[in-house]
Image (cartoon, rainbow, N blue to C red; front, side, top):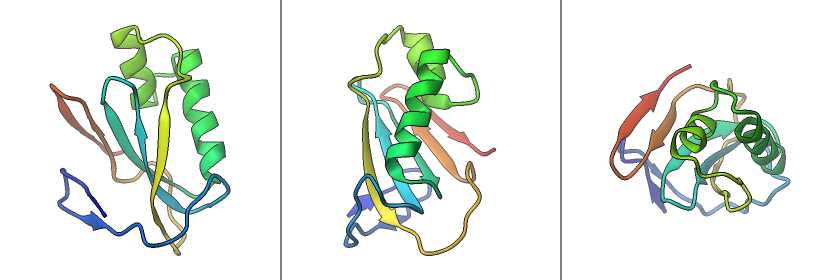
Length: 110
C-alpha cells in the first residue's frame, strides 16, 4: 500500500513488479529522503538508468537531477527505485509526476 500525498490516491502493490516490469508507477528516492513519483512505459531498470544519466549530465528536465545539482549530492549510486503499481494501459510519460522533499513540495506536470 502506498498513498500519494499530493493526489490522495492509494496504490496497492499487490502485483509482482521487478526491474524488467514495464508500465509502472514508481517512487524514486534519494538518500536525503527526497522522492519523486513517476510512471513509465519502459522497463523499470531502463527508467532508473535514464534518471541516473540525467543526474550525471545535470539534465534540467528531470526534477531529481535538478535536486541532486541544487543540493550537491554527488554520486547517484544510492538512488533507490521502487515499483508501486503495475498499470495495464498505454500512457504518456511525464504526465502527473510528483516531487517531494522534506522542506518543499512541488507538483510537476509536463
